[in-house]
Image (tube, rainbow over all chains, first blue to last red; front, side, top):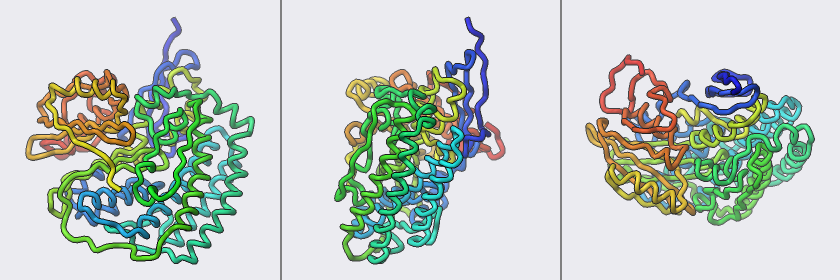
Length: 359
Length: 122
């Protein structure tokens, strides 16, 4: 019998932007099992509902993640609005959708850069992040914040975007689409990338579904789950295609994200074409009394905000289930049987966001 | 647009049977989450998704109640069950990967649980 050894991977590792620890059980260079540990940066955000009014908690919810912060804030607001039966103006729905899709562009471009870095393709990393800067510039111009936008509130949004600015954003997206086209051609066709990602970290469709995979991790294995199909925000008025691939390897997960960049651009341009004029918020009175599981599609997959109020200004519970937490069991499955050298690429392929997970 | 969802209260004794039924009907485990209610009780929501409809099985337990693990049916549930233990102090029996209190390491033991003693290390 081959001798087994345990190699610790993380919590500090060049490929990991945030700390997660894996005990890799090896037979020679082959991983036979992986045991994950988190908990290095647990922040106890959920506890803050007891000390912050439900209107203020939007700012806390946004700070759950530094990449998809807008979607966290919007999901929280939509959950409260469902409990309080608040009808948000249509223009606010569209603006939330536009910013959400910009968040997805930002997140996927950031991931593509990190992924390229994980297999040593430095100039591809810089090419991806160069385009990402243009997305962050739009955030800054329209909300005032590049990382934390602070533009969402219960009952609508805090800031409007002028129609001529929206038209300019749509025109800019045409040139961004061209740049992304050049970038994704390299990711999807270059031999170096294929060599490091094809048939690596394979997750079957059944495993993806039953282990709870979400987002591009699930869709890369052929599981067509996309919460935008539930029609929250303005998604019920837009054409949302669900991108899937069937191989379930690192390349497939990369393929899904590459194609979703174009989907996001299409959705933003559709929303800009259809956005109606009108108010951007409604007055909110009272306090939430009830509970709701609000689900949204983050760049990494399904996000769940469970919110429970008792009629006072402080919520009883805010439970945030982020996509990375539910993508950890599928990651363990992907790692079983892989080569040690492929571990960084496989870990990156689920786009882990650990601060988000720890919340 | 309101997302379709339901909450079904069940007893702890019915948990395994109900979860098994969900598995057989092709539901995906979306999450398990706890909420402290009252001084000594916890609501535990087991959320399952199928075709974008969320079905929540709800049990109400105390910190002393032994909750059976569902990892036999949903292998990936170990992340939620370890979290239930580490943050709320709920005893879960039979987890496939049991970290025994070290999955989420917090400065305060069971920070969302019944009794919080500051400075006590997990």
